[in-house]
Length: 250
Image 1 (cartoon, rainbow, N blue to C red):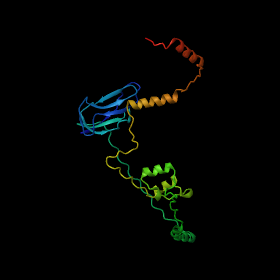
Image 2: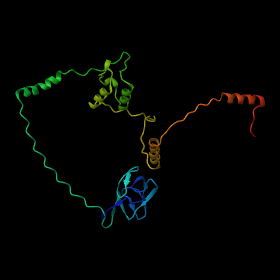
Image 3: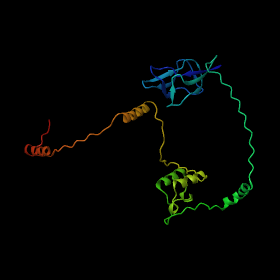
Image 4: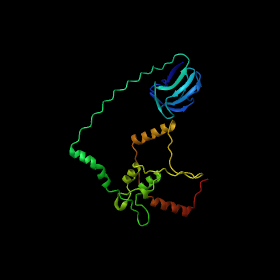
């Protein structure tokens, strides 16, 4: 048994890479020669790539939407006989770790400061408690409120460092860094959640988007306006309608 690495062939003149648009095989599948395996889209066309030998798929190089260079590995098979995979290189020996250096000796003043440091830290003033306005609402900008809502954080628990106890972005970041972030509550069953979801743009849609961006950035865009006075023309139209009646085309 051996490992055979199937590389992306040259599928067109001037083509240096292709985009994976669809997989027709998965890891563990047994494929036979001429069986369709993957669809590759280039700037010219979408080409179906078929297997060149029989074997079992052991690894897929890339996901839908990934770009694969011509000559780059695409699929690995386990086949009967010898494969074409290069032998794995031996792992490098670990480098010896340097011996830890002895800590430098401290003078009497440094030693005294080291002993007093825990006491000095306890004497530091605590951060101010969040100040709530008279209406019971924490002072914060809409951006901070949206971030807190997305993170599931109660702003009344965040110490505000701004004027009148206003909670700033820096205060929210410090609260999250200190481990104060809470998991957002799960949405009730049967209630749709609002928000955004990201979907990869692949294949023809991505090419359309690339060309639209290119045309916007490379082709000059302009608008042309011209003002025309049609006062007399409108007066003539009204006069003709009044004297001859409305003409209905037959």
